[in-house]
Length: 549
Image 1 (cartoon, rainbow, N blue to C red):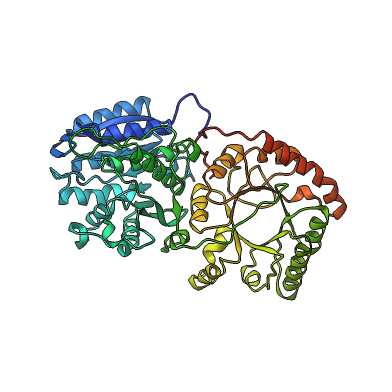
Image 2: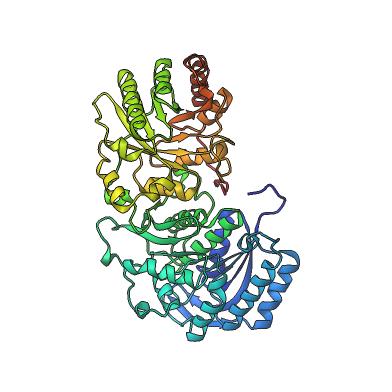
């Protein structure tokens, strides 16, 4: 979050729940958990308790308008989040204010960054009771709110109702969910999350049993987002909490896909803190510390699949385990000769990163493999996956393949299947620069996950902001696989700073020099830096990760 005197502001335009479980009450708890300021705008008043809704009374248009106009004078929002609106007039009022506030977007910039709109289409109560939506209201959603939405967060039945699917009154098969998201996108929504908490376990497969899987369709990522289901009857306000979590993360500067990852963690944590408050389902209780790290009670990291595949790890795919070198250094070089130099200098974890083709590629790989075998070092090959799979690996060689996620996504389904067939003998390293990439790498069952760039780097031209020590510590705490730190680590001081965060290894590229003599000269100071960083490693509750795009 930028260092300012005031936290980001969210307007939540939603219903007042007299039981204190959902609506504006849940929105406030979610906003407080993220440390943002929420302005609760009452769009409807409900008479309800933990067993159902007895009445829904929309606020008259003039009263709603007066609330929004007063806030605009003093508390302009970074994000508007909607919940129960209750009337066509309220939907039209929200659309007018979104257009008015986005009109201030500087030329050439993204209006969704000027003002994000998160739409939680509350169309009924999970506990039952009075209806929230009629055909006119659904039409208004399609015409006025969905086309303006930065993120829309329906559950499966709500998505079906918004699209007037015949399944709206019945269960929605998992196979239809991506199609529903694409149709909502065609209506104008920029990001869609169709949540799966309402899905029946009757159609679950062995891999999804005990999981809540949501379908994510965002500008940055698409796929099934999975987390362990929390076994509780106290789920009142789950949808409100999730949508408000998305809104809060957007307000802090996270892009859509990362905001969804954080919101899913918040919701999991809130469900685990759910409590009875009446005779029926009690409220979920969002609170700070949901992302403070597993050792400090934080929620688990969800897993993201590739396209329409479930996360590979849910299907039993785990790539061969990675063993970190004792000195905690990972040398990345551009030739077989430099691999030999690194091994001679004492490195025991190396990566060959070079764009090669044909015979030159084969010779470089074979020579690199021989050099690492002589010292029982681990060799990772960057990008050249097919040639790496074809290598005849001896028992004295630990072999790995490293891929950027854009390269992983570019593989055809048959190529992905081939890669998974070799998971028992091959280590897989995946790069990650964002929360959704970390979630995807975890879902792939990777052997190691690279976090970067830790510091500004000129090695690669990339859009990512530096992770810094705070995000690196977060990666180390939440990754199910060992983490290696990479990017901008040029000096012993840089390496020591990264090592304090507890990664399995610290990657050094230019800091190794370009000759054997330079590598031999640099290595003792780098090894000493890792050792010093490990001695001062701390174990404390973590702040929220900062935005990376």
